[in-house]
Amino acid sequence: MDMDYNNNGELGHIDPELLQLNEVSSLGIKSNAFVAQKLFDQWLSLPETATLVKSMLNKAKTGATLSVSGATNSPKSAGNNLVPPLSPRSSSGSPRITKQSRGPSVLGSPLKVLAEPIKELIPQFYFQNGRPPPNELKERCLFRTNQFFYGHANGLSLNEFKPVTKEICMLPSFFSSTLFKKIDVANTGVVTRDAFVDFWVNGNMLTKDTATQIFTLLKQPDLRHLTQEDFKPILRELLTTHPGLEFLQSTPEFQERYAETVIYRIFYYVNRAGNGCLTLRELKRGSLISAMLHADEEEDINKVLRFFSYEHFYVIYCKFWELDTDHDFLIDKENLIRYGNHALTYRIVDRIFSQVPRKFTSEVEGKMGYEDFVYFILSEEDKSSEPSLEYWFKCIDLDGNGVLTRNELQFFYEEQLHRMECMAQEPVLFEDILCQIVDMIKPQDEAYLTLNDLKGNKLSGSCFNILFNLNKFMAFESRDPFLIRQERENPTLTEWDRFAHREYIRLSMEEDADDASNGSADVWDESLEAPF
Image 1 (cartoon, helix red, strand yellow):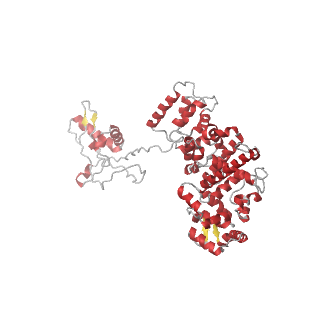
Image 2 (tube, one colour):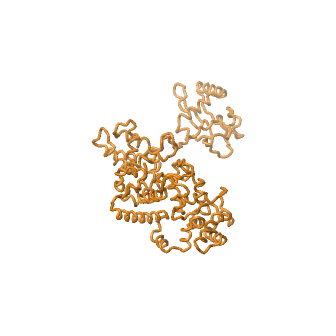
Image 3 (cartoon, one colour):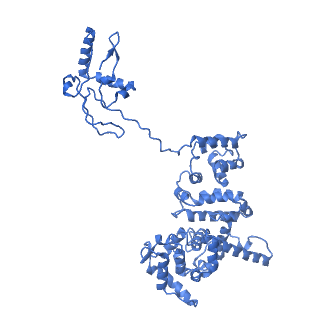
């Protein structure tokens, strides 16, 4: 190919074809002057190139026709190959270096070049503070924020801030105080627009899901889980703002007990590890978030059956108070054996007080505290739930090997059999009971039962009742038509929901009868008040 020179004898244009690089297209070199220049500079640095250039310059000065043919590997042009090829490059290298291979080349190049790596744009996938919000979402949030903060240049007070919590952050209104304090770290008593935007928008809280937002707001900065203490601020605000709990404002001692009971129920169902450390994963898997949103929208707190129902608290507290005869807020074995009209066997009560299913929090030897009782009654009255199945499975598993054997089942049923004989009931032999349990559960191995065999089986709770709760065992055998009708009428209710409803009606009727006989209209009799 020809090389063009200007009138002063200087090189004016390089034809890309002169380089004859099969690995790089001439069109690519023409469209990128920088690459062409770099290749040309590299070619000029070769020793053989200097000889070629001097020869060409001499020909140009004498006026001779200047024509340089590209070197090839063909036999016809082998003698004109003036520039030796560069040493071959390794074909192995970075996966980002793409090389177009078209088979063995017929043409040899006087200049070999290493193709530059093709830069691939990998989108950012890790954000230390969370993924930033899309522009559309951010603009919509800022527009709403400006509306709420309009006319409040100095910021919003706590009462004025509550609509922001619910309308912009889409959180339950009883999170207002917690959110407010997270933003107002200097305790100025107000939250400005800029401070809110910096925390909620720039801090990427806007893009988090509701569970992560709540988890971030509640947990302590130095922890990676939630504790029971973390829930107390939002429950205090719920008690002071929810219309269904206003009547408790005159009895702060029962406000405290209500809050404690809700927290115990939350950890019973949501903290599946049972270690008192509620993780974000557990929070997302549980039903707490939806229950919180339901409680915020529903004026009748008793319709929020999960965690927050006051009637459920009332039943739990009264059942505990009935057993706690000396009102020291602790119960022992003899107290618990009276539960459910002496429904439980001594052997199962012994296992409970051995703290096998759950270690007591009372710190008093041989005594069960209120929190321990909450775990017990929730397990006893709803044996269809997974926490309950795990609770009773640990009780029956005497050797702790993870399976229930024939001997373990027989050990607990022996007392049931004796009680039936004492009550002149027709006894059911253990062999028949064992066959019945196997038919009900259908375990993978009929020689023993595992926890997985019990989970997901609607009749698992009845198996435990057969072993240690005589009253429920007899009710199951007789197939109480009243209970069957209740289940059909309200299939969405749990066993606990039905029990709490029945007990609340019973307790209410007893209290009304007491009020009538005493001529008192107090909701809580002074003789029943607990020491706080």
